Image 1 (tube, rainbow, N blue to C red):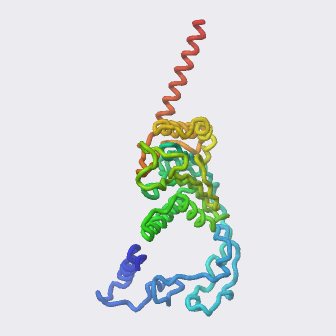
Image 2: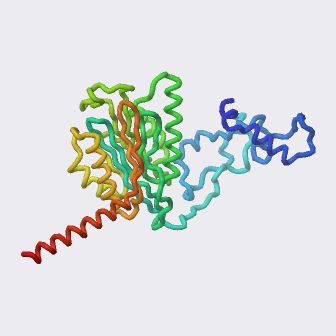
Image 3: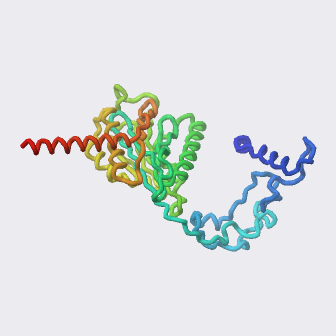
Length: 340
């Protein structure tokens, strides 16, 4: 099996059995099941998984720490060979779980932004991962490449965002292998929205902005420029299934400050240098005012040739330059007042 080859499950369990039973001669098989410690120990293969009955598939997704009481084990049908009494545990999973409160509020914030212009799509984000009042990581990666012409800006829980980025990248790669072409950005956004929708109302927290190019390797315009009905796409997808299409998005606790720069500066005729300057300025202003955003800024430019990444820049230096600039301006105004 491909899963067995990729995950090396066979070799992992063989190593475990060799450790537990060192006296067995090499080359002889052990007559016990690989999963003898699990409640489904009589299964013939490691890949016989527990399949829930239809009644449980109709339940809402599992909320971590907030699982309600479910039906008794007697509701399981014994007609299914996979659900025989000898292969199932004494009670169904999570039947007696109690509500467990979080140890402290998991407040977090970020600043991510992306906008379309004649040169493609410009995406920028800060690098601070926070957990309540704690800076968990000052150099996290919030812009995650999915394939050569698609990147995703992530905000929410870092682990959830990284997991669903890998899932989406895998599904898009499988689609490309099956059909010989890349799935469009619109199709990728719809796929991610459908995958996230069943988790609506749970602790899952993912807000992604997908920035992609669907026109292949060459753009329709001269000098790499595109028209307003061009091939670039911009979608916002949330963990509750929301899917929005637009030309400018900013997500996170610092987005109100970023919008103040983007709304007055972004227009279709921007050059690449102007777009980079506006995106950098928007992230800097957000990190200056928002306590949950900060440290560095990452920038990606998506065009017909794929995405390119600008070197990460530490915004602390810009903060000190801004502070020094204001100090000089204040000194000059004071000197002009005294001279008058």
